[in-house]
Length: 205
Image (cartoon, rainbow, N blue to C red; front, top):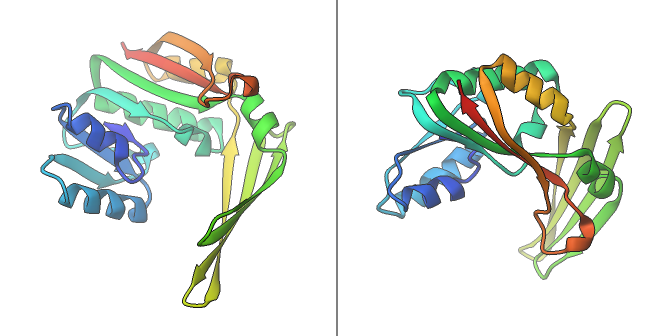
């Protein structure tokens, strides 16, 4: 099971390795795009629109994954704990939950400045801010798309929350997961940016 599967890229990759896969995402748009990808392939993947805090699968699984700092989009410890409990309820005893989170270095390095990206067909503006006391990050996204001789502007606000390793470990334990590995890593090709993410491997006990 891939939690917060987005457009299904990882779920389809796992299916190509002959795994039986369920992809779950709260966004109807993401699930629609994942389903379109699936329709163009011979693979068998079940895509479900569900909130990870209300997760309910048709059958238990041996492995749950959640990548690309998806869990940081939960904005309270209560929500993160609830998601962990629902995921644990979907994973067989002895199964695994593997995921990543953005650590505080990521938020203080990447979420404290504005960036503009100019491409031939669009301009993307990211206006970032991070409140260290509240451990709350916000990105105001503006996308200007060149279309039919004019410009279409799209706006969205993305919010994330930093959770300490101690908080994540405690919430995993409360959900009956045992942490087997926790390590910071660099997810970019630039070693100078440092280790901005934390890798987690937890066993269902």
